[in-house]
Length: 249
Image (tube, one colour):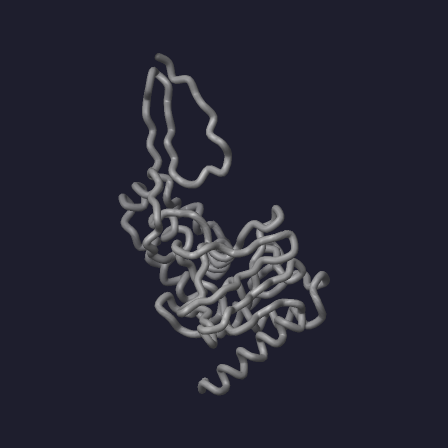
């Protein structure tokens, strides 16, 4: 595909997104340091990308049919959104690079030696049997695709059309979320990046399939005996307040 055609197709995608109520200003998809990503068209001007709540896609409202990611039920969406979303997934997300990169990473995990897989499982980082529990390879890849793109919004796991094309950087701020929408805005000299979540390099790699210099590291799973009591230490983020436990004098 030549550059003129590529830009024209992107502009048509953006215009469709706007017609449905989304906002997409001063941005385009192209190859960068982290593969396909979004970049400002004019770095001297701010970008804005906003997905209103009525365009967020519930993770359980997606299915894989003949290799295409499609909506199960489009009755809650504007007319024409089903076709727009299928085109978006086929040419800019799942079909553009996501499926192939996920397959490459997952094949690598499955090729790990049995002792290494067992070690990772004991450390609470990876369970190969649970990870690949689908009915076939394509469904496994599809489920991994969902897992790497869904976020929790208003108590529901959803995917964010357009925003899911943005890559991760631990040094950036996260999405702007409120009860009506999810958005990214601001000035970017280079690629538009956001912080997906707080994690460490090991968990980021296992969850998302890429290496990243995260700003912190968490403990691996440990089991200790203190005062005849078993203590389990498990790394990761705990969003609940800690509860003091008396371990004896």
